[in-house]
Image (tube, rainbow over all chains, first blue to last red; front, side, top):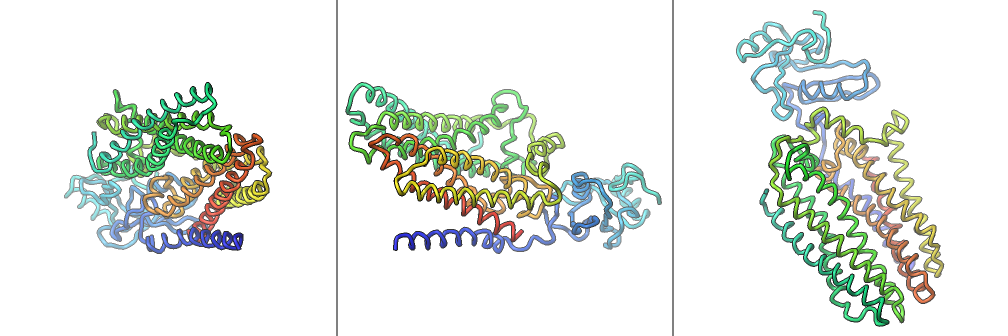
Length: 147
Length: 344
């Protein structure tokens, strides 16, 4: 009787322990729409998506987080898609225009880099907010761009 | 000095711990010297046992209190995002603030050591109490003195940490925004993942940890059955105790390198503290692993110290009970790791 009771206590204890991660996950809810780099909520106007071959696409909250992510990943082919602030649409980073200005883009990441679909919009933002157009090696994601 | 409810409570508890620990250490040494001269070894040592028990209870509460206090410091610095950042405050600073990281590192060693010593004292005391002539009395008293001294040292260091002004000139940020030098250094401490074959490193680590937990639980179960029959295999129990300590160290590396990135959904984020803050159920897993290892160590102490003809029976019974606790701790940790990995 004693051994059966201790066996039952063991099983109940292990079941309780097994339930802990399940309960924890259920209470935390879904982690979708969170930055893969720092866990901050992803604002759709500044979202960056990184697609790598053979891996799931990752959502990042800002250009700064995306740059940190790429620096942490092993080198390999990947595609970076940014959200243009002038159109609100996704643009391939290779064809986007980036401006670093005094206006914060994503406060949680300390990011001041803004992405635009057109050069005119980028230059207008740079002029209005004392920013500078990031080109060539200074531009995020692509060391040398051909436009 | 940062004053908030947590730091005030912790400072009070540390002050009590220092006072009682120092008295217990002094009383333990005096009783030990008396025990070597007279036959009535434990005469007048009741106060010492009460003190040692109180110090053990305070010491067990000390670690969670320290974590809560460090957590309450996080909002004090804009760049610090978790306790990892708080532990780096003071790095490279001149003066007393520069001692802060070293003090925390010393506390991280002394606190578990004080708990282990207190448990060792209690284990030997229980074994000794079951005998007629108390052959382990001198060792029990010496261990009580050691436990008191360790608790006093841990409490004293923690009190010093709390009282040093946190006015560092070079603020090292939290793990999420660590400067490249610090981030690189944190990466260098990840010794296990790079050693495993990619891309299944995390999976391999998970399987290895879960399997080692189950193997340790099975070993503890087998040794418990032998001890329950009165046969304490001292060397195997010592080996299991040593393996249990290694299991805890591996578990800490697993929590940082595998569990944190997987549970938080942040592949490049390696931080124990963020895991505990964002997924508190992992504290239960850490407690289970630590309980398993400590129970195995204490069972080894019971088996080795109680090996004499008068105390062997009692030591075997105590060791059997502790091995049962250790088996559950290791098995439960393995179950937790497997279920959490399946969910992540």
